[in-house]
Image (tube, rainbow, N blue to C red):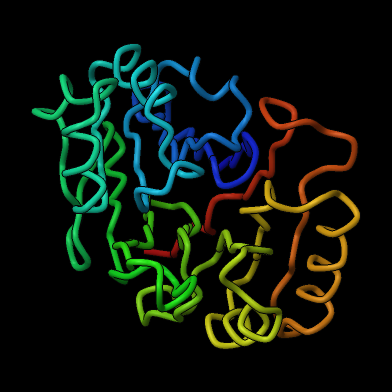
Length: 247
């Protein structure tokens, strides 16, 4: 499994599978704080959006992605599916939308990659701001490490606990450091990778990342993206396949 960061919360998860026919590529949360390169991706098997906020769902990017990936499954948090079905850029693709509510699942690609949804609500920004839906995605593929993408929530849903690899919002207008650390301590992923960092300067991001790493469980490797890389094809983390179980 390879995970490529296209900035902020946009992640491309690629599974090589047992061969070329089994390869699978799933894109998560291409928003307006992502690198514009993300809109040019092709050969995707699925495009998944955790919630409707533009930093996760940017209609101009989504229009290009939907158009250039006609066979891709489009998996959307239910409120997001409704919204994008009414937006000029994306309404013509609404027949392809799958509204994935908590507890729902979809199988994508030829390698039997399963994407499950959990959660239901975006983190509270302020009581005066109307709440919106949010789903976390749990991705499982035969022989691969489990990947979980939380969207904008730090609720430790049971489905997230024990994920091998977890993307987590390292900084957000709606979070505080205590919540981030407690989330990592409860979920206890093997590896936690930072996202949602488009709202912070490089110096500010480093503070949040340092604290997340220092106070996460000893068993959790808070792993940053390779140094000196920019969003896109150069910013990649690779994860080995699970050991084969003896028959």
